[in-house]
Amino acid sequence: MKKMLIVLMVGGIISCANNHTNTRTFDLDEFDSKMASWKALNIDAYRFTAESYASYCPTIPVTVTVLPGVEPDLTYEQDDIKDNSGYMYELSRGNPFPPFYGLTIDALFDSIRKTILNSSKGDIGSIRYNKESYYPEYFSIDHGGKGGQAVLEITYFEILQ
Image (cartoon, rainbow, N blue to C red; front, side, top):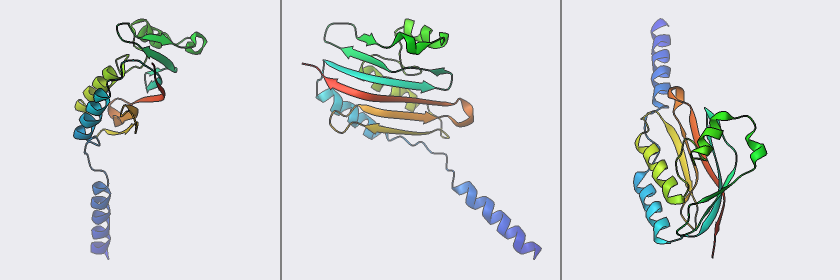
C-alpha cells in the first residue's frame, strides 16, 4: 500500500510539472511577417488610441495622431491623470505607453520586438494583430514573480487622408 501511494504521489508531481513548460509563447517569424505587412501598406497618416498597463505605472487612454513630416500629436484627458506622478513623468518625456516606447506604430512594433527578445523562458504572453492593417492590437507579457505584467492595447485606429 505504501509503495502504491508513493508511486501515485510521484506520478502526480511529474504530471503537474509537465503541465507548466517554460517556453516562449511568441512566434518571431509571425511577428516579423506582420510588421513587414504593416510597413508594406505604407500608411503614413493615421490616428490611434491606446493604453498600456504596467504593474508599476497605471496609464490612461491616449490618442496619437501621426502625420508625415510632423512630430506625433498626443491627446488625452488631463483630469484622468489625477496624482500619478510616475505617469506624469513618462508623459513629459513623450512616452504615453510605458513600459513600451514609441509614438508611432513602427516604434511600438520595435518596442514590442525588444520586449519579446528580452523575455525569459518562464514568461507568458500573447499578441493579437489587426486583420486589415496588421498592427498589434493587443500585446501582453507576464514575467511571473520576476517583474509583473505589461500590456499594450490599441483600441481605435483610423487612416487619415
